[in-house]
Image 1 (cartoon, one colour):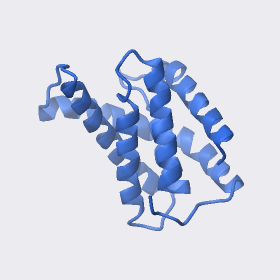
Image 2 (spheres, helix red, strand yellow):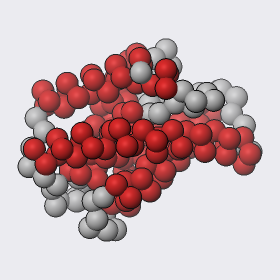
Image 3 (tube, helix red, strand yellow):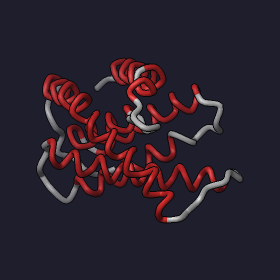
Length: 169
C-alpha cells in the first residue's frame, strides 16, 4: 500500500478510535481499532506493513492524547512484532488464526502499556486478578470487533495484490 493510502487509513482508524470506539464500550472496555487493523494487516500483508500500521496508528493516538508520546505507538509496535513471530509459524491466513493473534496482541500491547505507565510513575496494580479484569474485557471487545475490521482489510489486501510472502524485517 502506498504512503498516501496508508496515511488515509491511519487517519480513518484514529478518528474511528476516538469517536466510534468509546460509544461501543461495554462495561468500560472498548475495542482498539488501530491495533486490530495492525494485526489483520500483519497477517494479510506481512510484518513490515503491519508494523508501519501499528506504529502509525499508535502515533496518531499519541498525538490526540494528553499522555506522553509512545504510550500507544510502543505497545502497538511491540504487539505487531509479537504477531509477526506468531504469524511466521504458520502459512494460514484465516480469521481463526487472526483471532488467536488478536488475543496475543492485546496481551502484549496491554503489558507494554502497563509497564510504560508504571515507568512514568503511575500507579499500576500488577496482581493477577487486576490484570485479568483488564485483559479479558479488552480481548473480548477486540474479538467482537475483529468481525468488523477483518473483512474490509482482507478485501483491500486482495485488491492491492494479495498477501506477501516475505517475512524478514
